[in-house]
Image 1 (cartoon, rainbow, N blue to C red):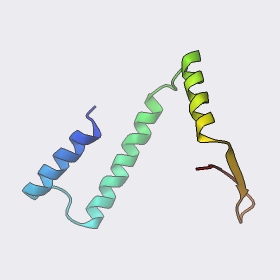
Image 2 (image 1 turned 90 degrees about the vertical axis):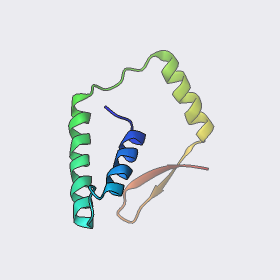
Image 3 (image 1 turned 45 degrees about the horizontal axis):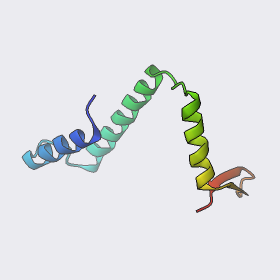
Image 4 (image 1 turned 135 degrees about the horizontal axis):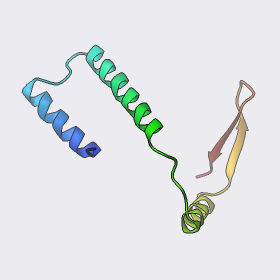
Length: 84
């Protein structure tokens, strides 16, 4: 599978040649297709298994980010956000 940079380069080249999507409808269809492809790929990939060093790194990064702030939205749902 190619990298996002490769995708962007190919897309720019196609746009220069006049082959790429031209209208907003074409772009909307392309976005929907790409979203579906991502959903299919996510179903095929197993969840990552973390080793103890991964847990330690993630815990250190979470500690550096600070404690999460929890606020209540208008619908009564809780929303957590990191303090900056």
